Image 1: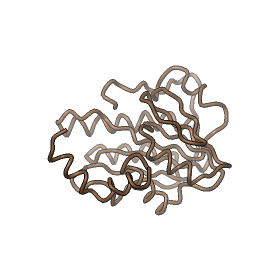
Image 2: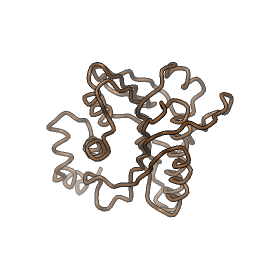
Image 3: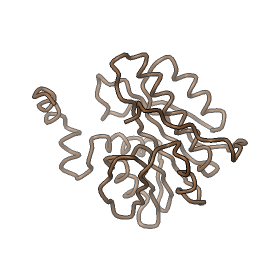
Length: 214
């Protein structure tokens, strides 16, 4: 990393606060904002965190649902242990992941999946849309009725289509950008609430994640 990047990161108040509070990443404050605005978590809820490494969102979710709740974090990368959290090393779309999640459904599914940046915005935007669709394909199989789905996506001309697809099975869908997102970042967050389960064929596979995911 260049010296300029490191200097800017040290001046970043969200980065400094995350380090001081042991939250592992500044992204934790994005989920704090989303929870405060949309009331995602309640004590005792079950949460599935996709693309969880290094665990910033996972810590927030675990603290929010408390000891009566349960959080499952999924990522192919290593996640240092978090009290009360079940870690599954895998990827969305892996054969057998659905079975590893167990039979009990989740109240909330989170996706902070990001594509490996190519530098071509149109490509990166399309890739982020594909990741949201893959996460939603899994969420449809594991969410409770009235459940909540939250996913990161890069802003662009595909957002409306993705929101329309998800919104067909949800009572309400919104987009927002947390204050902790950098001003220069194109990321937005899709928040879908009131899941209304539609028909999902058990034999219909969840799309495998392509190799551009990080």
